Every structure is written in structure tokens, then in C-alpha cells.
Length: 248
Image 1 (tube, rainbow, N blue to C red):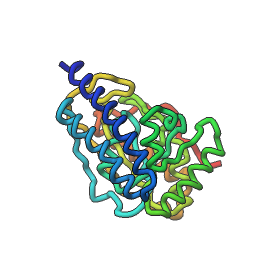
Image 2: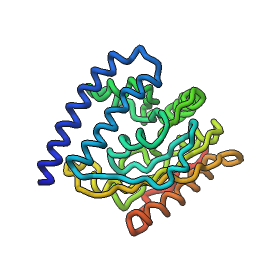
Image 3: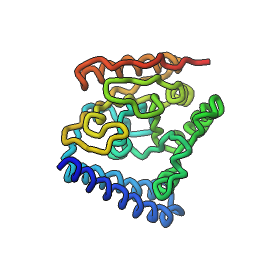
């Protein structure tokens, strides 16, 4: 039954992505807020499909910590689920993502419509500067910027190295850094096809005030908070692969 439910969701996930990719072509001339409001219906629809078909629900702790204005969202990356849920929890946002995602048929069209910061992860310092420069522009225009500090999805029970980009953007822009933890990997595993029924817990932490702090200090605060939250969510401390990046 899990296989059948997962297959039905997968088909609808793809079909709705194709439909919204064509919608993105028609809404492209409109202002960002209009495009965002229309295109994020896809995420909301898929969260609804997950609940109805795969019986995956979610609850959020710390909604009072969600800023009304722009912020740098530093989120745990464990599944594909959080890319949907963040759009329902936070104000209008753009993501820092690898540019290859924009090359995907259909799906990439929808991403491009939402004005992401698309980087070449092999570009090193050039990519970091792109995150800072374009991130400031997005923040100053009233948008949140979503950064996954681990850079890629990490299995349950583990935590990857935290890149410095999100913390640098927060410290150099002066906007708050908002930490987000969740345990979505237990029901929607990384690279997993089967979706398991269950309740996903998301925790939004208090914004990290970056004034007077270095990016390294922000990253250390973030990592300590993330370890504490993931220990509470998963019942054991995560295995931390590497140290977080430091300022250079």
C-alpha cells in the first residue's frame, strides 16, 4: 500500500509541476509578488496531496519567531519536503540553489520564475560573493532568502558541514538569521521514493541578531542550536560530519 500511495503522489507531483511550469510562462511579466502568490500554490497543493494520499502531516513550533519582514532563513536540509513547507510558513522568499536545477525541464521554469540565486557550487569565492551581492538585493527588496547551510540533503541522524554563505549574508546585510530544524527525513527520506505516514515536526528558532557578530560566530550559534533541536527531534545527537566553515 505504501508503494501504491507513493506512486500516486509521485505522478501527481510531476503532473502538477508540469502544469505550473506552463503557468509560469504566462505569469512571468507580472510583479514578483503576483508570480510568487500564484506559483507557490503548487507547494500548497502538494502539501495537501501528501496529507491526503500519503498521510503525512506537519506541525510547526515557534511560529511566533517568524519575522514579518525580510530575513535569512537557515534551514536544515534532510528531504524535499522542506522546500514545500517553507513557502507555507515564511513570507515571500527566494532560494539559494545550484544553477543546474534551472536546467531541469518544466521544474526549472517554475524555479526561474521565482527569481532564485542560482550559483555554480564549483565557483568557490565567486559563488560566495554572488550569494552576498544578490542576497542583499533580494533582502532590500523585501524578500526572505532561504539558505540550506549543509548545501545538500543529509540523511537522518547526520549533520553536514555548514557553509559560510548564509551566515555571511546575514552579518553583512544586517538582517536577522532565522534557524529552522525539522525531521522530515523520517517520512520522506533523502533520494527515497516511499513516503511513510507520520507527523513532521518543524521548529523555528528565535532570530539570531547578527549585529556585532562575525559569520563564524553566527554559524557556531546556528550549529549548536541545530544539534540541540535535532537531538530533541530524533532522540539522539546527530553525527556531525565536519566543522563549519570559518571566515577567510
